[in-house]
Image (cartoon, rainbow, N blue to C red; front, side, top):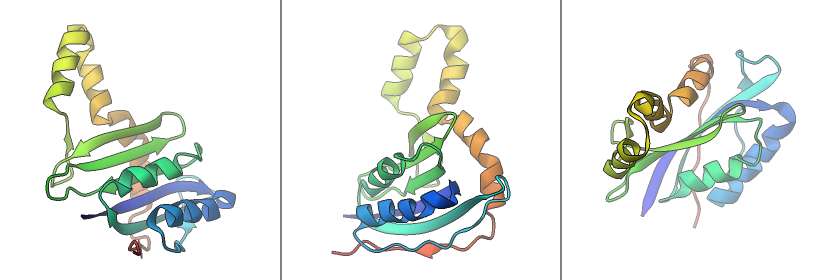
Length: 162
């Protein structure tokens, strides 16, 4: 079964850009050449984005490959497919990696088991902060400036071969 999604590299040092392309190429099994543009939110760094198609779970594999460079700011999405929830992965240098399940419209979905564990293990006064953790609020806040700076940037379309 095929899935699709988007890789947003919000900021990368110039020297790391070829490594990002190699990492994406390795996961998708096809040569990737991204269109890099300046990232106005961090002068001297670049940004790129691409859509992808591949087997279900490729979003996690892409995020895992990009995670090797802790200085990157990126997001990887995988849209829901029949019988499989979507996912979003975010990495911010100061926060590390976060991931969550997504609905058909892109909202973060917090599962019943996650809510039950939260209620059972966390003092009531800490529940709002833990809910924000489950929703990835700190990552959204940290990436928002970078998302806005990328509006109108070129997109590369990729498809897995084989």
